[in-house]
Length: 97
Image (cartoon, rainbow, N blue to C red; front, side, top):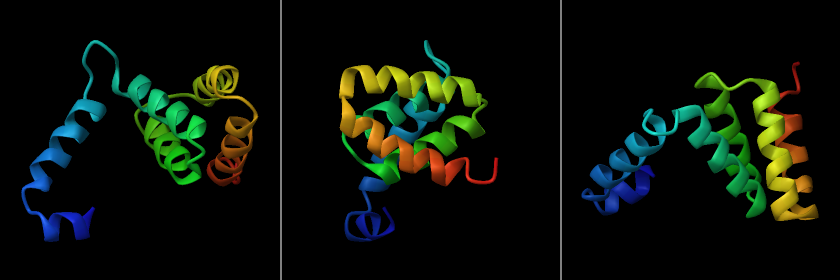
């Protein structure tokens, strides 16, 4: 994002707005929003997206059980590639657990 903002300074306010929408409680608590982002990342086969959003959800108060259940929902709708992507992210985030 740093490079993008340097090349287009106006993008900083857009990025801040997006963060505010996702990281603020609204009709949905922020942790649920991050669990949604995590599931979307898994379905799109973006391991880094899953790791980052999983960590963010946990930091926002999501439990391990909530993370796992959200991934189960993603598996049902996203198929086998979702499981493969999420597996690596789970190993990365929960390696110390």
